[in-house]
Image 1 (cartoon, helix red, strand yellow):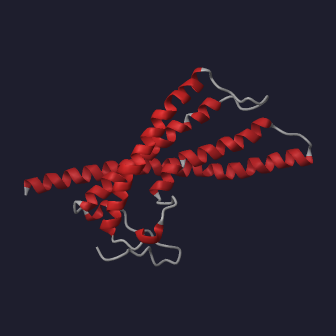
Image 2 (cartoon, rainbow, N blue to C red):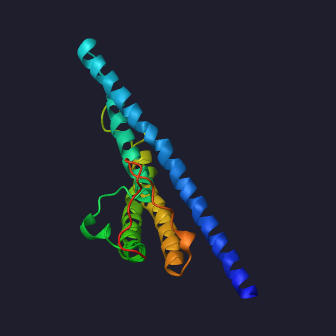
Length: 200
């Protein structure tokens, strides 16, 4: 009984840790989502300035590219958390929850984590060199902080690794018999919920 209590406590602590990591990813994703609106507004401003006032701003034009890079690369982990990345869904949706947990666990360990580590290791010197020379835009009047944008090459895989760790924790615990380790399926647009595949 004492062993069971310790196991339950340890499981609760691990799940709470995973929940904190998920909360961080969710907060980051919600924050950068506002860049979508900013991109629309700045693009509109660039068009108005160009065609109504016959003037332009290199910095404004580059800012749209920068915001797009931040939105895509920083938001990738949040999209992963929401299972929003494109997947071959011919078979996956029909799988039972345990089979899907195995697919997600193996995919994270074999694909996600190695790819993220590769991106980190291969980008490190490239980003470090950009910081060393304080790389700026090649265009006159452009944004100076190109090295800050290139840092996203490190930020993206780190955030993806954090979310990957969450998936490893949750799917491993679920396969070990912890039923509440995986979040409940979210309701679909028609309010019926996402249907599981075969019964567990």
